Length: 255
Image 1 (cartoon, rainbow, N blue to C red):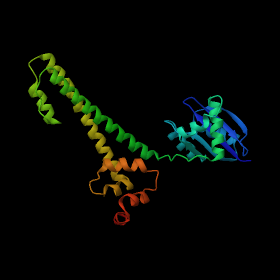
Image 2 (cartoon, rainbow, N blue to C red):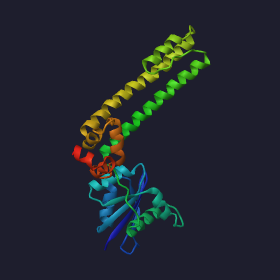
Image 3 (tube, rainbow, N blue to C red):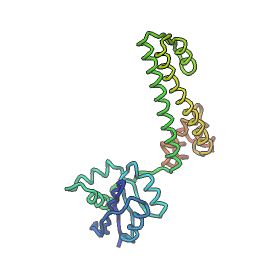
Image 4 (cartoon, helix red, strand yellow):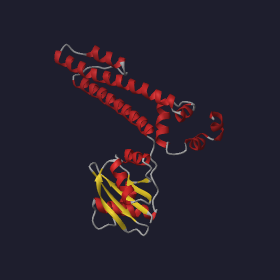
């Protein structure tokens, strides 16, 4: 008998539903939300597992990788597409959602979402953190410029050290304002140090990653652009993807 499993994951418990080849419930229940517990119950209740399915979400990445490491055949289904099928159920509960996902996997009427490797997610996380740091730094500089206008302080155009020197030259004799602007200036300075640390880390990632090395050979493409590209399309076979973007001649040149 073939088995198909639906998993409705939450932080504490995961609803599990097993259906047979005719789409009928064989077993359903809840287990703690750990890869070991889920894999154990699936081996016990679905010994002839064909495929399991779960929705995409913040927790889907580590669970998908953990179950794949335990040789559990599991697919991620886009949450919006799964919702269209689950809306047909009378009552929306974790138990019914797990059953709906099991029936969806049994039907095969879905396209699995490709899950990138942990290395790609790690690179993407550092890149996103760097972007946030840059935005915070820009926001703080704009805040300083806005306050300067309030107190009629003339600041020259520029950024970095030029901006800091301009602010300090324009500071009045008022001790309160001087302390205020000095405190505000210390924030972008600290953020820039953290941004430089992220830049060094991302540069190491780009040097160690084969796909990033190839993308970086394109004129005008640096480590940040290469990482952004590779982490965005890494679920493709990146060699044919590069050929489609840069052309076969470029692919031959970098191979």
